[in-house]
Image (cartoon, rainbow, N blue to C red; front, side, top):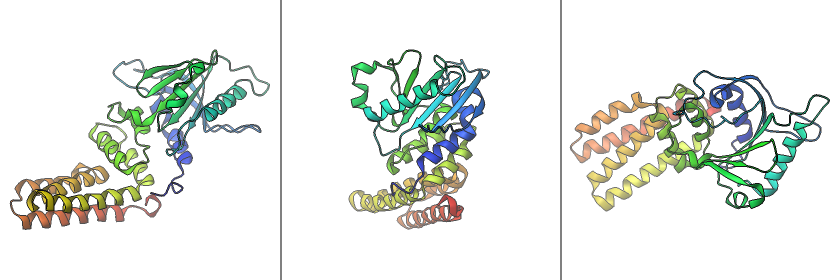
Length: 291
């Protein structure tokens, strides 16, 4: 997948525009991008009162640290957060804290940095006083009265956190890891599964094709190494998994039932071809803008 083809910052902003109230666990009164002569932040929002049930300890809420005013910065998936970029983000937040003629936002502002990769060198700098809140969430105790939070997206894989964490988990740039993330998400009883699918389709036609080709290649390799029947069975299962991820359980169910009764190499070959064509047809049926 070409790194320059996915507009990551636009995508994360669009997701926040539509779904930040769900993600944050707080009522959002106003959400819009802030522009200034001296700096630009990725996203800025103002939060109102907590939503009902927001204190439920069983729900993972990645933005439960929000205060009245909140800045979110998003690192591209192929980049690691460096110390220089971290200091730049903090500097921009401090400019916003005391910008204009209005009252200071000191003590009422948070800075959240979303990054795919773990910034190990940055977290090791003692001067910033990073405190681990979870495997995927750190707080820097550096600037008094400014909550500085780093959320590491890849560390959230496999955590069942419902819709809030899901919107972070779905932003993954590696096709092999995407497949693992999608399977976890689509197995959950999420209110926003259609939204997840739309986001995945926006990002990932290339990833779909890559996974499809990988499955076909692995099926043939396993067939030679482990016996044709066993290899074909594994190939069919992999294709069915792919179809379930991109088109849903209902689309995959007929093929799963056929696999249960297939008892010959010829039936397995026919089934492998049919489910592969079903995957291709689903991909080709999607609107051009999502391919």
